[in-house]
Figure 1: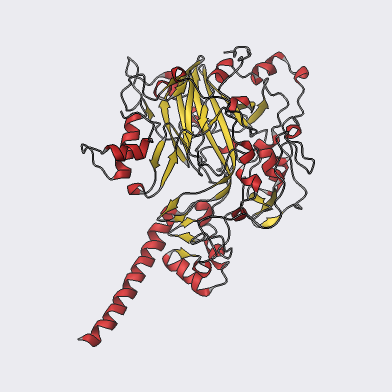
Figure 2: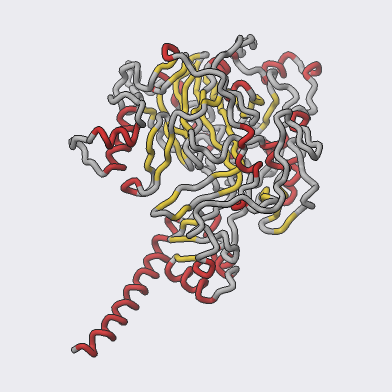
Length: 545
C-alpha cells in the first residue's frame, strides 16, 4: 500500500499541474493580460535564456524564476545608484547642461497678434474654468512626485520597441516630439538610467509643492456636506437625463469617439483608449479672461500641469486637468509588486454647462469615478482630489481604496498630504475633437503643441523576460508599458466618464467610501464595523460619520 501512494501522489500532482496549466493558458492569461502584451507573448517568453524559465512561464504563468533573486521579487526597496547621477533640474528651471525648461514651454510658433477675432474665440479659456480649478492632495509619504514633461524627455531616448532611434544626447523637445510619428505608434521614450537605481529626476523631489500656509477650516467644504443621497444622478422633472449628461457627437461616431477630418490626416485618431492601450482606428462665445487675484494657500509645484478645454456644444465645456509623473510605482499583492512603469499621465475633468460646474471625474488606473459637483469635497468652490501613493490614481476621499482584486489584496492609499494647486503653474490649450486640433490658449499663447500629437508611449516598453528586473505572475507584469499621452484619454467623450458605456454619476462619496471599507475589511452589509476598522480607512484625524 505504501508503495502505491508515491506513484499516485506523483500522478495526481502532474494532473493538477496540467489542469492549472490549461486553465491558466486558456482562461486566466487571456483575461488578465493586456492585448498589447499578449500580441508579443511568444517573443517575450523566448527572450529568456533559461529553458526552464520559458517552460514554467508558458505552462504555469510563473515568469522570471531564472533571476528570482535579482529582480524585485526579493529586493523590495530600491537603492540609490553608486554611479554618478544625472543632474536634476534646478529651481530656476535650468539644469547644469544648459537646458532651459521655460524655453521649452514657450517654443510655440503662433503669434497672438496674428489671430483673427474668430481665432481668438477658439483659443479663449473661460474665466469660470480657472475659478473652479481642482486642488490635489498628494500622498504624504509619496516617493514619486509631479514632474515636468520637458525634463522627462531630456532623460529619455526614443526607441522603436527596444531599438534606439536617436543618440542619447539627441533629445527631441516639446515642439518636435511628434516628429517621431514617422516611425509609427510603437515608439517608447525609454529612460537613460536604470529606474531601479532611482535617479533623482525620476522622483521629482524638487517639484514638491510649496506650502506657505494651510486652508482655513471655514473655507473647506467636506465631501457630502450638501446632504445629498448617494446613488446615481437624479433625472430631471420630466424623467429625462439633464442636457449636459450626454453631449457632443453622440452615436454618430461610436459614442464619444472622434471623426477625423478626412482631408487633414490619415493617421488613426484616438477614440476610447484606456490607460496603456494602443491606438484604435476610427473611421456661444466664452466670456473674457479676468485676473484671479492673489492666493494664500500655496501649493505651487515647479512641475507644470496641462489644462485642455473642450467645447462639447449646448453650452457644455469639459476642462481636463492633466498631471504628469515620471514614474508609476505599482502596488503590492502578497508582498510582490506589480505594474511599475516609466511615465504616468493622470487627469481630472470638470464638466460645466453655461458656466456652472455640473460634474467631476477622477481617473483611477484604466477607469475612474464621476460625481456631481455638489458631492465632492471643496476648498472654497474648487473641487479637491486625492492622489494615491505611487500609482497617482485620483480619488474623491482620503483612505484605502481597493480595486480589481477581492478582499483588499490590491489597493491604493490616499491622505491629506501636500496640497498641489495646478493653476499656479499650468499651460492651457483648447481642443477641437472633430478636427483633432489643439490650440495654445490666450492664457499661454506660446505653449507648444507638437508633444500632444506624439503617438508613442511616454516611458519604457515592458521589459523582456531576459531582463533581471522583469517578472510576471499569472499575467501580471512587474514592469508594464509606459502610457499614451493626453490625446488618447477620450477627449471627445460625450459623457464625463472615461469610457463610452453608461456613466454613473454619484451624488455622494459617502456610500462609495463605505462599500470600499466593507469590502476591504470583509464586513458584510448590515454588520457593524469597529471604530478601529473605520480609522484604518479614513485616517486618525477624520471625523467619524
